[in-house]
Image (cartoon, rainbow, N blue to C red; front, side):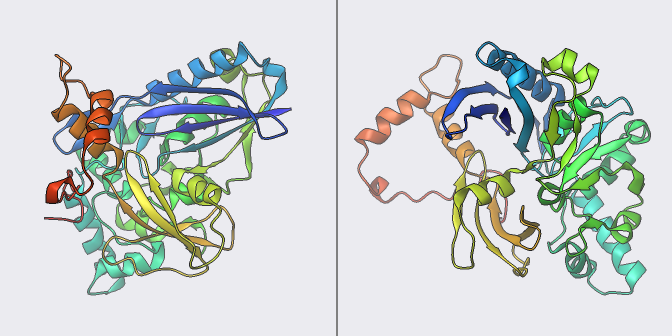
Length: 355
């Protein structure tokens, strides 16, 4: 039996199936679109699911469904995906890079401080989550939804944190989240690996609206009849929790001990190490639960990576419609002298960690 693996990324849904020798027998990719309005950055979860189903059916032209014994995912983290009782999205997903919830974050910090008689609520939150707290955190964005779209909040059966978990929910009817992705929510007790009643209570959010937590290797459930009809997989095909993209990349890079580092560049990027202790979160560092139960991933993330390449490809595009011209950019780079004639570019195009 083979395992079908998918990454539900920010710019594309990607698929690969490998045989027993580790050789790819199917690969595919489908572009995803981001909806940007000011600080609001959203994506349509049904576009994720549609792309997943499309790639799966392309795979079945080569590999019969009966040969797929399991489905495994990775995906973008730190999102807010409002899902109704039937498992379908109630609105667009609010992405990790969305900047709408700064005021709600301040409210939660103040309430956490008031409840615990701590002068610095953010420091108290960091004691629980291992991370600083700001408006990029899903918990703050859920409060934004409660205040600004109360009808969506009331109808939401579960707020999912990773893009992949929407696909898992559609396939299995289980609201799940993995430890790595959910440790970016600003609401998980990093040491105990459970949702923090204190922090979720400080935000005034119903803890019953959060997904069940799984380790990456755990089976969430199996494909239902509805999931099979929509995707083409056989019913009872196993679906595993998988992991957020930082967990998958860190494991795949092979870093296993302190002093080893992984640098990842996608739409965004990060530098990561693994250890059995937290790093200082002040200044933007993150501590995430690793795929291995006894380890943490110490991460320095930044929201600007491949999106900077896309920006320059759009600015210098020869396309009449202004679409990014990556081919032309490659031509220019081949002719460019090292050092860019002394030009130095700071890639903080979203203002993150920089005035």
